[in-house]
Image (tube, rainbow, N blue to C red; front, side, top):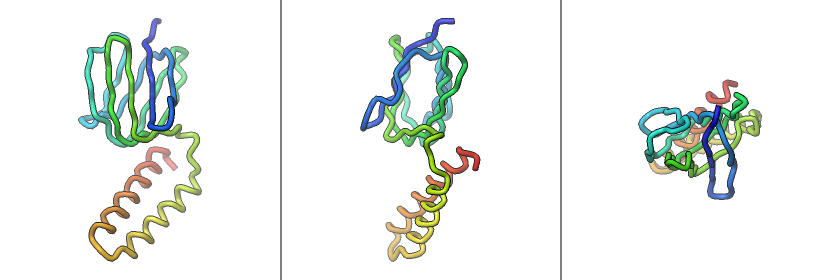
Amino acid sequence: MPGFHFDLVSPEKLIYSGEVEAVVVPGSEGEFTVLKDHAPLMSTLRRGLLEIISQTNSTAKYYIQGGFADVSTDGLTILADYADRLEDFDVAKLDRDIAEADVEFAGADDDELRRQASEKRDQLIELKHILKV
């Protein structure tokens, strides 16, 4: 079955480029799936799981943090603020980062520092939930 072209781009590099069967995207208004001949649209993205289903039905999973999705007649392009493959995450380091964010929150001496530490911790916990560990 013919697929469509998909590019996943972060500020540092082109992460993925190729023909795919489907892409499940964490849109800011909700998750959506792009298939061949999807109607054109643009969407902002939220933090979450991006799933790329290849034409051989294998799945690659990425954790992304924000960005934009552009569906056009040429395919799908995602410009992610941050993207990394789930399998590349070190769970032990993630646990250390969560503990460090807890310490930062406890030691914050003003509301803005507490908010930043809380947001960082929430993002790390969400990632850990996505990893299902």
